[in-house]
Image (cartoon, rainbow over all chains, first blue to last red; front, top):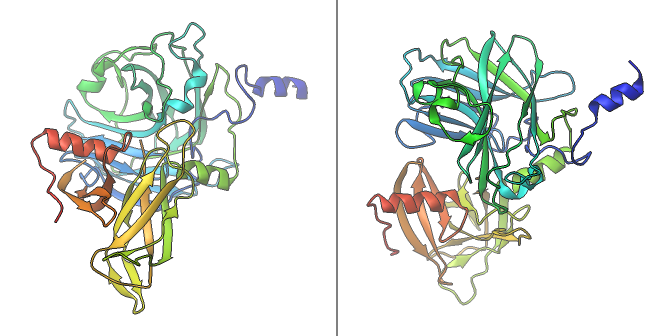
Length: 354
Length: 56
């Protein structure tokens, strides 16, 4: 094959040549929350029977009502050219599948990043999803695009084998229902790997249409059918048009900054600014980048106050957040009620995930 | 989300936030923050009949 032919085969037929991938952290290089997550499905990330556990940045496991349990880790088992993958391992099997059970790997998108697909217009574009995957044994799972704004879905089945394989799925354009052009949740991308009849009892909906629950994941196997089950994935790319292009690797710093729009784990150290007030305040610290929305803050471990280094539990105010397309800076500031210190330090998690 | 407690906290600058325990973790949630999923979950929790405790 000539070089010209190879080049032509890899060029996209729609959209720009760079910045094509709307999935953030598709090669799982960033994992601010840790590199191993265990006992997922036990309810730790949700109400009883439900569990939404964020794992590597921008990806979560969304599970409901299943007795199956899994762990997720950032793995170094990858196809050539990648350094990390996301690995799911079943730790508790569930072969008695209730109707409304589900287990899926998920990432989410805000409307601002989806306008390129021109959804809901006469010039709507196709979506091409590509990713590399492998498993301990062959299986069939489903991938779904779920338009939250208009309650429309489309799904495709894919096969995973025991070898790393690149899966390429082309989803049709949708001339119905535009994505909202704002910073709120507009679409979910779901890899369905376990479900009962409520979500899998119908016929898979392979063209866009109003949501029919039973048609979302029909025809899939269950990752919970044995504790031997594993699933590895990396190189996730969702791009404009009907042509898959090679995975667009980007600099680590670029991906990290994109992730920081949604979540950041930041070190805080500041002198007190408490003159004239009865309590103690730290300086306002900016988050690494302006965040998608005003974030929720949480202490990551204990804070120390100085002099002395004793433990303290400050309250954290967060202000700002984009809220609109142009964005503005986001700040956090701890304060300690009825206390006086000269210096305060610790780690704060800020979260504006969709 | 599993919300087990929520209480308003107000500082010397009269900035009010909610100190909540969500999924077993203490969090500081901004009020009226469009797009913040924890604020949205607290609104749903209140709609179910729960109450955010007043600040001390």
